[in-house]
Image 1 (cartoon, rainbow, N blue to C red):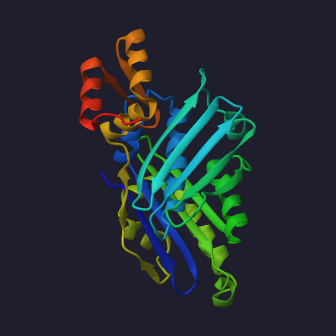
Image 2: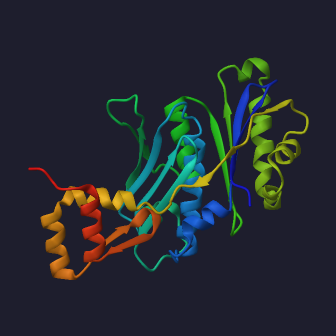
Length: 285
């Protein structure tokens, strides 16, 4: 299994890029959710693109992409830390059928939120659903947000999501007026042979751009960002207060907390609740 982001630079052309490859992390995200194939693919493509965006974070932070649409996919959320710990989920209405992305998502937009400890407030950007594919939507976003011509190629092979991003830097035309057109054409050939995504990042880049000088940066490993976190549930119960928690216990016999983004359910009976509040000590009013 190989889950990574690999950045590179075509040195003689001043064209930068990145590869993203997901398999086990993507499968963990899908586990137990029973998503239809179009939903699984959309979540995978959005995850790959989020990783390419998150990999630009220079300091501690979290990038969240959220879709609220009017189509069959009513909500999609993915968030990723600067250490590339990623998690995500989607909500949809059945039946789901393969259809143009615009119909699939409906009228809506993607909201990108960047949270960093050094920022007083979260920074938010809106990504219009302008394009017929996930790649086209984010190509337009890169063009608007970074003022850089970009091409994004996304490939799904059933158990793997792969992405290739290339970006034209301001000095590219000075290096070679035909360089961007040539690299764009070579990059697009990756769609002709999806089996190439099973190679190492170095082999993929060498095969695509074998006549170019390629600087390959250190590979960054991607991790699944969900883990069991009872402390988070304990904090939630303390925020509710003992009186409110006891009222729920009296009515339902247990406390049930659903963590939708991680697809996990927490159930606590009266004994478990007592232990949580006793451990925290008495509440002072």
